[in-house]
Amino acid sequence: MKLNWISKWCLLAAGLFTCALGSRAAEGKWLTDYQQALTQAKQENKRVLIDFTGSDWCGWCIKFDKEVYSQQSFVDYADKNLVLLKLDFPQRKPLPAAQREANDKLARQYQVSGFPTTVVLDSAGKQLGKLVGYQAGGPQAFIAKLEKLK
Image (cartoon, rainbow, N blue to C red; front, side):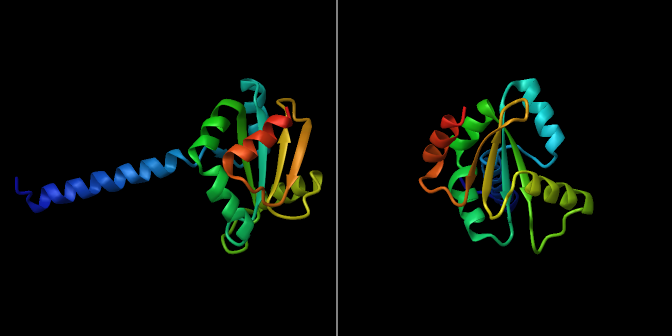
């Protein structure tokens, strides 16, 4: 069967759309509002995972995001157990002033001194633990560390 240019274009578009959906599915659902994350965690009886990151300049943050947070096994675990909160400290992309101030306040509150830093809270907002720096071993090793913080 010979495909005309319209059929080829439709197949290409469908393939690109499918790839885009697949990559979005593995990203997880990250919030950026602390109070919203706490409210959702309480409603769903989940823990809050706060990712303090420098998404556009911190090499270890970018590596950890690719090796752990964007992996389907972590996304599946998070969907069942966590409310994800990303507090970004970019250098090249602008953040609204209110978001920047809120992120700075939370970094001081949780005594963040480097990136990446992961803070885990229970559903009531009590800190269960903090992991500082890049966590080697992929999603399974990271999930095991999170499980110890229950």
